[in-house]
Amino acid sequence: MGTVMQNHVVRRFAPLALVLGVLSMMGAIPASAAAVPPDATALPHVAKSLADGQSLRIVAFGSSSTEGVGASSKATSYPIRLQAELAASLPPKMTVTVENRGIGGEDVDDMMRRIPTITAEKPDLVIWQTGTNDPLRDVKLGHFITQTQAGIAAFRAAGIDVMLMGPQLCAAMQDKAGAMRFRDAVRQIGEEMHVPVIHRYSMMERWLARKTLTEDEMLSPDGLHMADGGYHLLAMAVARQILGSHAPKRLLAGD
Image (cartoon, rainbow, N blue to C red):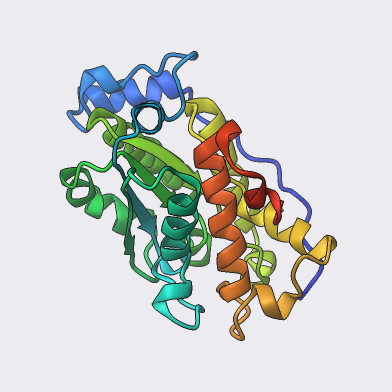
């Protein structure tokens, strides 16, 4: 694998309030979703479910990394591993389900078209994996940003918590000019909209640097998708982030 590319400077985003306000006036999102209070709890519905011991319904939404391309079986994809990790960490009486809504090859426009179907399912949490196919398909960065912001607002307007998952470390991202700007855009959108972000690229760098996994254990033979070892550690990291300070020590093993 080639040397990891240096971070690119991300173009300054349009102010979030302006973007959401315009979308609201256009009828793209309800006016109530146009303001995100700076002190908002990042995952309020998840927090309530955990506090009350209620069932927790999660939708893993994204492209091939969510679908499980590169895994040796469906059982080793990250959504199924995530459900297992959460179930092992929560009281037996608490039901946890993670539905896989990943479709390989999709970019932000493809996924935006699917959001109404996802919101109709009324999960507590959507984990939105995004930002890899867009640069590879030459989607404009500004378009990716505004669509992602609108998608997050749509989930929130439907009473659904959102987490973002950024792109993976892979040769295709390293070799594509400007691709790192999409990784950085996912991070900044998360900061601006108070959305937790799973920094997958950075995590994968740490796994290699600390020899937690070899490259062959982390990535499938195509060099683009994750393999079983990578998906397993990813599921542990996502579970840890969902559970926050209540995550058991075993989930820290792959940190």
